[in-house]
Length: 82
Image (cartoon, rainbow, N blue to C red; front, top):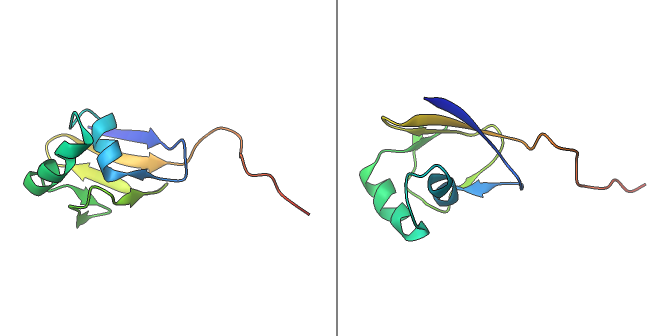
């Protein structure tokens, strides 16, 4: 299954994403999950729960889903200064 996760901030950690997707119940389970499941970020094996994911990153969870990280669709929050 392929899906898109829209960021609310600049990034989300891999552990937070796994929790949001329901792959783990608590943040503490992330290390074990990543040691047992060969999760890939942008095609490369990733075992760090703290890996920061930014817009454009693709996370593959074998047998489950492929998640594309997307930028927020709402209005920009940064004010420009002249």
